[in-house]
Length: 419
Image 1 (cartoon, rainbow, N blue to C red):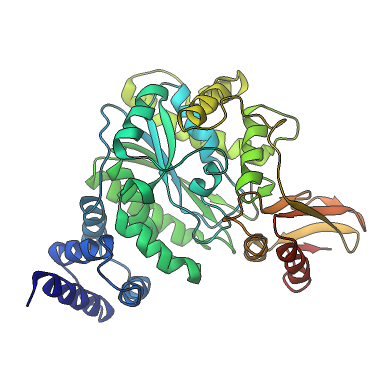
Image 2: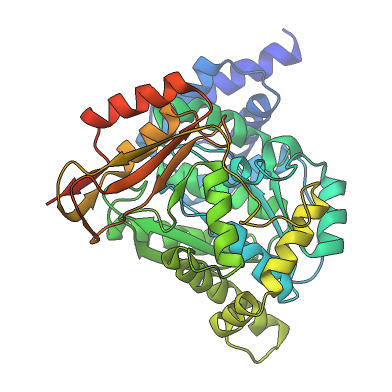
């Protein structure tokens, strides 16, 4: 029997063991990740593995071994000294804090090579958003050069070949719109280990329409992140926060870019919830970086200063320029392209609830993230009052048929509950 056939059979046996709830060894896990990363395993078998992982979860040893194997079967970046990073467990759209945090941390003097996935459960991932204004496909050596020159980057891990098995597994998960908690941890930590991060803040949004719905689960996930971080010599700080709606107003790549520009430019239109969340997370990350750098500064105070005095905007433009984008990018010149339809409130009242599932679904119907300018701009947020026939949101799409379908879908899948 050929080595190729033997490796495939071994991978199948590993999946069978996981389906039966049995523990698997590091060598078995490595072989399985190697088969997936080199696309030697069919989508059907990969799906069985994902299903088994969702049902059974992983032991602490398996969690470590899967993360290690995912890293070892892909490329790695090489950075020295303090290397910062940020990630979110996700589930909430329109909350693009990463594009604010990275330039703040880089402007503070720390390296922050941000490597992100595309969307899984939302209409846009960080990679999708940045792709609307700059290149995201780089080799490991190109990323090292960009970060060496400007301090930070926004790159797609799928092109980098970092944790390649993860991107293949994500493609299997995407149609189902779910990830297991342990798979989220592995996916995030594998990328952090691969980019040589040693200081990390994890955003853990909790809410009835988030990936993590209960605080008890969030606390367990946070503990696993910290424990796994210790094994890889990464200092991890977590931020568990109740999330009922997007922190920004734009949902979809270009619309989220505009929100970020509003914040970086300190425009009056800027979404303050997005700004505050970004500053809180940047502050927590800077605190642990400052501590190890023996710098006597408060993280959040420094983050706020860097944002307000314009250094974050300057650094953001430097990063975008280094990635082939417009070095003069501005909210005033950045236009949302395509067709727009403004929708109004059917009645007067107060916005009591937002259904993020429906929000995500309709933004995808509009064409996000493939259509970079498709999505929804929220004119009203939770607890705000609205009058009958007052504009609630704007739908954007390059496709008129998608726009019509989204408007029709809204009747059966409402985004707001107004009382």
